[in-house]
Image (spheres, rainbow, N blue to C red):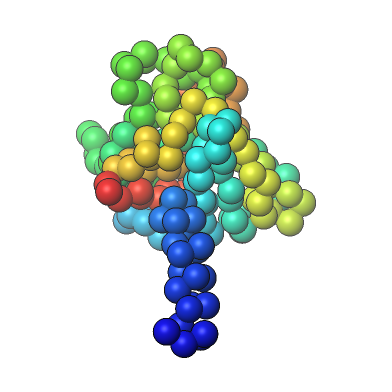
Length: 176
Ligand SMILES: [Cu+2]
């Protein structure tokens, strides 16, 4: 084996496990016609303290806060009910494998497992500050969708589902 090949093999061995471990999802604007323009990506990585969520998002209002959740279904298509179109509605409700029926945020054991921490934009409308979801593991994300809401999140059902309101952007995490 040449030195060059040996070095390449060593590089692949050291890099490959990290590349497999992380999940990166592209977020696209939720529109009545389905997924629209990309606003960036979010990466998820297991740590001893839960999933580390690292956003790289731009083009949202300056200094805005956004509820961010894992939703049940692996789709970002709009839904239509009684003539009402809901962008990204086909993603369904917050991922709630224990059927708690409660929105309680990322730090309570008594609510949706899919309730993740709020993401916050800086003065330029970029979201880059990493946050930690202590109850989640990366494998929980598989086969679901992540949704960034227009508004913030009270981590309670007052108002309903934390008050994030409309679905602003969405990304699918394919089952693996
Ligand atoms: Cu949500």
